[in-house]
Image 1 (tube, protein in one colour):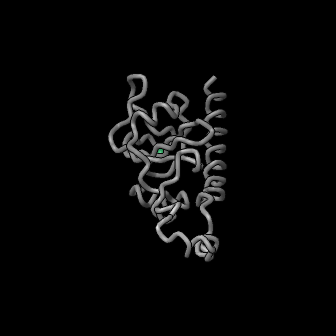
Image 2 (cartoon, helix red, strand yellow; image 1 turned 90 degrees about the horizontal axis):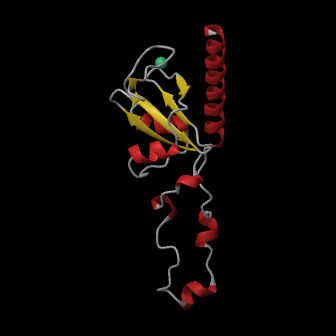
Image 3 (spheres, helix red, strand yellow; image 1 turned 90 degrees about the vertical axis):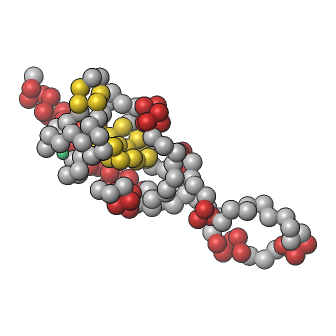
Length: 150
Ligand SMILES: [Zn+2]
């Protein structure tokens, strides 16, 4: 019984490693129009100088939650799920998590040491209730981790 559980946890860990690697590979900037296309002069530019359809430059727009591979936030206090403090199955640490809400509706926990654990009892609804508004976009997972202090 225990052995089977350990196997499953190992497979979960393997999957998340794979997911993380894929996330780095595919986590890219949303499909903004290229600067070249935007700056190409058109007849309309000179005809209607006051008419600016996209007034925000691309780097000031924040992508929506559906345009990214996942969302992440730092969770420094102990994480209590179903009345119990969640500890990392690999190293036992129980505070200072990064919590990921992925586009496939899974929620993952990453401890300070970098162990990733699927947390089936949490879902995107929980994440949304407990996270602030999306305020930063990170082109890579590492960039996001650095930004969050991990
Ligand atoms: Zn750990």
